[in-house]
Structures are given as structure tokens and as C-alpha cells.
Amino acid sequence: MRRMKRLAAAIFLFGGFLAITSASADNYPSRPIRLLHGFAAGGAADTLSRIIADGLSKKLGQPIIVEAKPGAGGNIAADAIAKAAPDGYTLGLVTGAHAISAATYKSLAYQPAESFEMISTLVYYALVIAVRSDYQAKSLGELVAMAKQKPGALSFGSVGFGSTHHLAGELLNAAAGVEIVHVPYRGDSQAVTALLGGEVPVIVGTPVLLAAQIQGGAIRGLAVTSPTRTALLPDVPTVQEAEIKGYDVRTWAGLLAPKGTPTAIMAALNAATLDALRDPDLKQRLETAVGGEVRGSSPQEMKTLIETEISKWTGVVERAKIPKI
Image 1 (cartoon, one colour):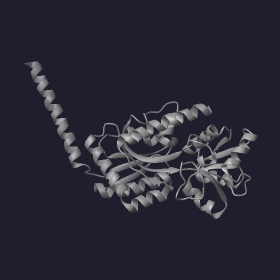
Image 2 (tube, one colour):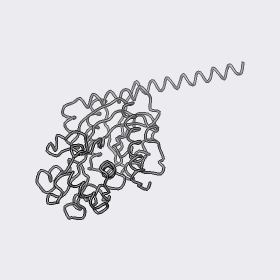
Image 3 (spheres, rainbow, N blue to C red):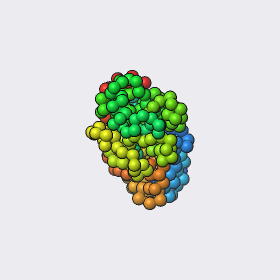
Image 4 (cartoon, helix red, strand yellow):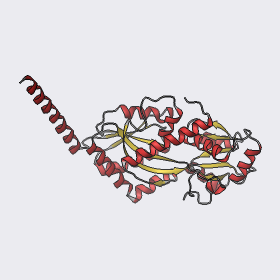
């Protein structure tokens, strides 16, 4: 009899938990939502966060407050998201750096794929390999030929160690069979200043930042890192056009939530995100912000993307013998 009473009590408590969870999902959202990201205010991640927050707020009927937690390549924010209550009121925007962290850090306080529930990807965008307009290499093919003649003599700048920009350069080294030495800077603007000042002959940068100077003639875009040319820089060829086959680097941004967020809430967030991405004005704002292509996904597609990227960048780090942080 005592065992039956305990079993009945357990069933009652479990039923109550399910009822509360169901009620929470049915009423979701009933208060403002936080959207965290791990980069500086005013940067690409911050801009993307504010654009999608505006669109999601209209779909969900609640304010979405963007909060920047910069540092450690986005890891501080990712850790905060992973440890937040799984109730749908703390979400995160992550970029390609989220997967790269698994390849460049010895250990993380969270698992990039398993510590989260994925909502949807938002946008993909390429990078640009660029030189100063008066530099002797007028094409990527010419730059590769120079690098092969003098291994280790050339250098390329990026936004920092372990960034997508850095690893895009290392992947170029591996794919083209060259050794161009990486020089890290603190952000895109410092890398551009270093290029224009002659500190480095080459940089890997973002199309939005470099487009005006490429179009104005101060900088020459040698190649974009995507397999097809970008709408923002239609005259800049791809890396693959320089006969470097299979080269494809596109960074991305996507939304996620803490592990254990109820299935019904995740379904609502995915539906609202995909609906928002169909809005022509929001789509244009996102694509203009990074010079990229809006592309939503299912949660599983986003998880598969992250797992694939982790494997890809782990291989690049190991081949380049980059020491882990």
C-alpha cells in the first residue's frame, strides 16, 4: 500500500510538471525575451541581432532585448546562453566562430552542438582576400605564384587569432600549397589600416567593410571565399576561379536556445524565425548588413551545419599546427 501511495504521488507530481510545461508553452511568450551575442556593440553580430530581434518581436508580440557579452570569440556569451533557464526567454545569436571555438580551444565550458537547442540559421556570407591596389599581385593566381617562390615571406592580416578570417587564410595555404604567415589584428578596421599602411600585403576581410574601398580603388579584391561571386562585389572572382578547387569558406549566423527548452516553444521560435525571414524588408536588411544571403533552416539542419563546421575547422587547425588556446 505504501509503495502504491508513493507511485501515485510520483505520477501526480509528473502530471503537474507536464501541465505546467504545457501551460508555459501555450502562453509563450508572455514577457520580454533576451537575445545574447558574443561580440562588440556595432559589429556585424550586433547589427544582425538587432535586425532579427525587430522581426521576431513583431511575430511573437513581445519585446526582444539584445544584449552583447563580448569576449573570447563569442565563448562568454555562448556559456551564458548554455547556462540560462531553458524557458524560451533567453536566446542566442551565434556566428561561424561558434563552431571554430571547438577547433581552437583546448576545452570549453559547454558543447557547441549538444549544449543547445537550435532554432534556425539566418544568413550566410563570404569573406574577401584583398591587397592594396598598387600591390604587384593583380590576381589570386599571381599571389599564389609569389608565395610559392618565397615560402613564409608573405603575410596576411585578419581580425584575430582563431577567427573565420584567420582559418580562411590557413585553408588557402593548405589548398594552394603555400605558406603565407598569419598576422592577427584587433578587428577588421585595424587589419584594413595595416594593409593600407603597408604592414601586411594581404588581408582576409568582410565584403561590407571592404566594398567601398574596393569600388573606390584603394584596395583590390583578389577573390571572394564562397564558391559563387557575391552580389555586393560582382566583379571580384572566387577562389575556385583561380583553379583552387573545392575551396569554400562562408561564415554564417543563426539562432539557438539553452538545451532542454520545451519542444513546443522551439517549434514556435522556428516558425516565427522562418516567417520573419520571408519578409522582403527584413531579408534585405540582413543581406545588406553583411553582404550575404538569407537562408533559414530546420533545427536539425543547423545542428548538422555546426557539426560539419567543427570537423572541417579541426582538420584545418591540425594541418596548420595551430596551437590551441
